[in-house]
Amino acid sequence: MTDQCASTEASAETFADLWTDIDALWTWLDENRAHGDQEGLLLRMLKLSEEVGEVAQAVIGATGQNPRKGTTHTWDDVQSELCDVVITALVALRTLTPDTREVFTRHLARVKERSLGGS
Image (cartoon, rainbow, N blue to C red; front, side, top):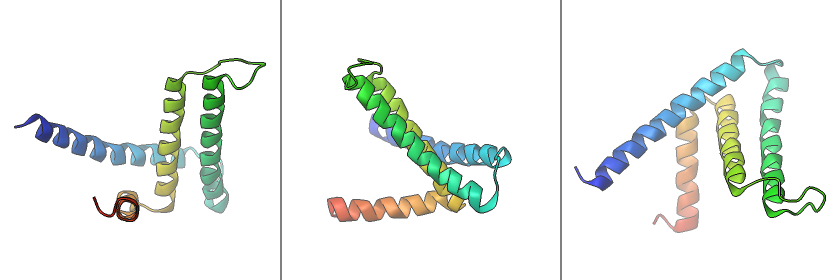
């Protein structure tokens, strides 16, 4: 087996694990939610805005843009916050549909086609 094939297989396993992990996080959050129905759904969507704000805070901190605080974050912190945004977005999508993987894959294919011309 070539290194590229092994890498592709490992990536496929990681991608499959991603959806299993998103389902597990969604289940845990759903079992422990403080609000149900429409209110819970809206709050789950709003969580994404909170996470994006944390990315902005980390970028400001990594670049030292607040002279009162100085440099308070690293670019590793920014990476971590971006990962939180991705996870939160996927959990929010899972909240809307149990077909998260299929919905995301279809949408990614459309974006790829539109942006890269199917390359």
